[in-house]
Length: 264
Image 1 (cartoon, helix red, strand yellow):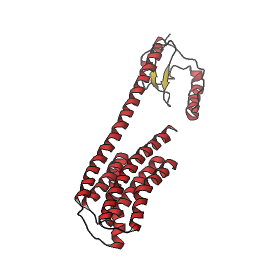
Image 2 (spheres, one colour; image 1 turned 180 degrees about the vertical axis):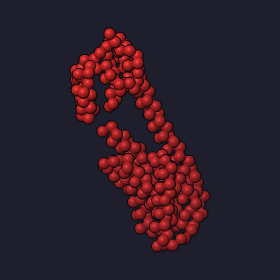
Image 3 (tube, helix red, strand yellow; image 1 turned 135 degrees about the vertical axis):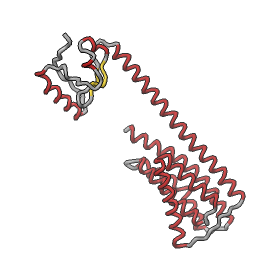
Image 4 (tube, helix red, strand yellow; image 1 turned 60 degrees about the vertical axis):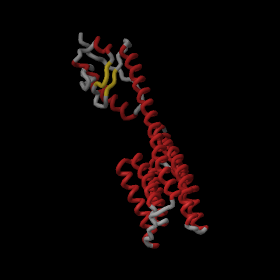
């Protein structure tokens, strides 16, 4: 449950970033279309892509069985569709840079170099999907206003993503610190308790023993990695080891009675 919630949190964060950045892109691309006197069909496609699509992508991610995998697929579709839009507009330099930079940055954060490379391939595939039937019609230039919007938009986008990553790292550091404090409290309790408290692995080897064990067993017998059941009475060995394996398999708590040979 906790893992699914964390994956959905990633989808919610990406939804905010995508919705804001696509709305800004609607303004920039819309300005280009206005300058080129585009027809109503193109404006409809623009609204569907940059206003409606981010909400559909979010719905797809939070309802999927694996929200993280769905969000990664959303990022790839972002690249694919933006590649087609850039090709349709004639590969204006600053628009192409902004689209490829933002999608590549997102995928790199999610999946590292593999994600960035996959984004580049999806972007190229989207561009090719337009160029193949419609032909290559380069229009690399753009107005000063469009260029300025692309430049400052890219700066703002990178800063916004950096703030999101910083917030996640701060939350992770706080969680690690809380875990360390919990471990300190656990050790404080066990090391001052009179009871015998220990942790063993699946092979019945010591992982931790409280100091109280030193009252009854020698230090060599308590070494980390040593056989925790070495001191168990011979008549109880098979029963105890078998019971441990059953508890490990079931994941349930239980009680095992055993006799142990102490140092005296």
